[in-house]
Length: 310
Ligand code: G3I
Image 1 (cartoon, rainbow, N blue to C red):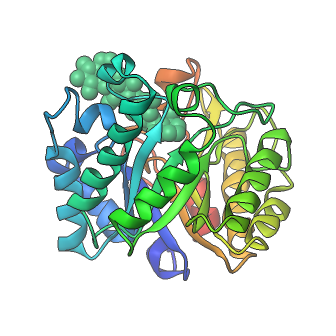
Image 2: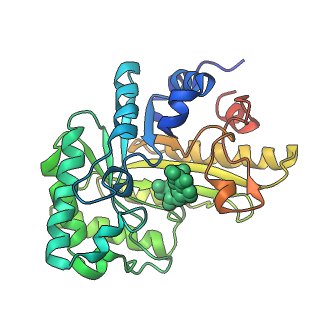
């Protein structure tokens, strides 16, 4: 009874994280994705540890599969992610600052270059802040210093001038110490002429922590800096087992995320981190929590889906 697929009820990109493996092996997964969404984000396939597990030895099979799917089905792609403290290959640990710097530039060139013109937006720098707003002491921060962020954006612009370049983080939905730091950094980067086009707000929420009611205000202040905003990894986990009350609360959360994005014209994308409870990172990371997606394990739309798309 929905008005039409999600992608047709909004002018925003509506995306989901996807896994190449499921796309290839599950016809129902592929068909719901193709019907409802017009953007895809590789959940793991473009991460550095996956694409270059050993120095100079590349594996593009998963990333290629997703980009090819997107091209054949008229989907937009969000590239995820180039510079991140997690899921980078172990061989980076053996490099000193000078060498690491050129290796990061090369990585950005190689990966963005391979898909040049076929990726709408890239998460260039991911999760660089601690909760208190200080910089995470990642290998990049420790060995390259503060300038690695601006450098990464400059290298990214050169590697694919057609891609929108984003900084992306979690727990930056509401106004708090971490989102203040993100805001201040983006302002500074813009003032310095660093080529940054957008801010990704991951939006991994839990019904146990309350809704970040300043989400809309936060999106508005970022937009005022002259950047786009994307909801990049939305999901709303609930304590298991799910029941109708919890699913209703979850539906309210999803609708509030959707509405906050639609309240600001520069919020250009609403992407969820997976679309079915059949495949979600949540139960593996938060034991006792799950059922975080818009569709259940049998790909039936949940109350959250219906709340967004009645
Ligand atoms: O593919 C291997 C498999 O060969 C091996 O047997 C198995 C054993 O652990 O691991 C498999 O790799 C796992 C991979 O997901 C693919 O399933 C990794 O262990 C596991 O760590 C990895 O988790 C991913 C996680 O990022 C890594 O940090 C999740 O799928 C992915 O959803 C999650 O996504 C992140 C975003 O990139 C950034 N924001 C937060 C978000 C949620 O954590």
